Length: 97
Image: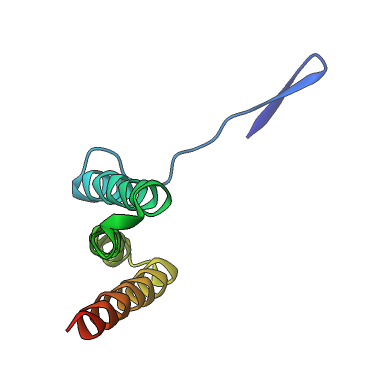
């Protein structure tokens, strides 16, 4: 929906994602985990592979949100991301032995 106000067009956006339910909390906590893992990766290289573990918590959370919302793109993206992170942790473990 939009309406004209002078030279500017006012656009009203309708929210489609739930607010204050379980998925809302999971998506925000998961996003914080992903941001923390990005900071760990860019600023604290000595925290490897902890950054991958933190990131996989975030992607698992977003996978859960995808399941709650029945959103296949979120499900596929985040399960693949989690597997990639776990592969990195597994390779680190094998190489550290």
